[in-house]
Length: 184
Figure 1 (cartoon, rainbow, N blue to C red):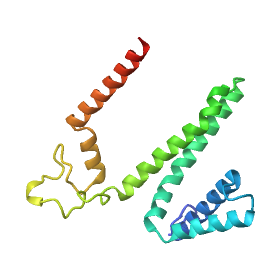
Figure 2 (tube, rainbow, N blue to C red; figure 1 turned 30 degrees about the vertical axis):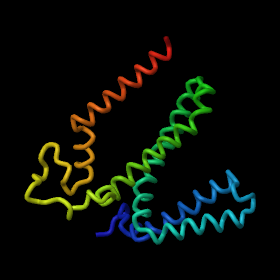
Figure 3 (cartoon, rainbow, N blue to C red; figure 1 turned 90 degrees about the vertical axis):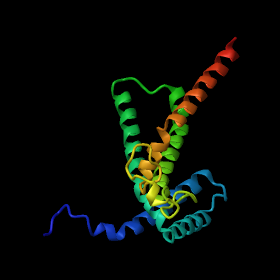
């Protein structure tokens, strides 16, 4: 049945939207930073080349489709913070505004790494494929099982393994020890 909110037709054009997004973002970055000069034609040609190359890599299209909504949510949240702080008569401190670009870059890289991991994680390494694991020795879904077919489950089991948590604790203790020794 037809509906006004039916967006299934837009899914057919999702690759076109990704190419347009990459072209626009690439052109904006090249025009703003100017690593190849101020020529609009060269910047447009390079951005178009990046967009077309991305079109031939289906995994890159999927990573971009998964990452863009998070970037939009981050920018809307940032815009609301600025809007609310200015509407109550208090501005964001200058120190925060000078460092906000770095924080946006760090959060963007984290979003990109998470989406790349979710898209390509299970087949990224030589030991992650399902053909390496002997199914007779694995209990799928067991506690601490890192040989299942789910990358998310494998990553969580690895991250919260007692040895990894102990290593993180030792690293935190070492970092604070170095900080305190430096103050003495």
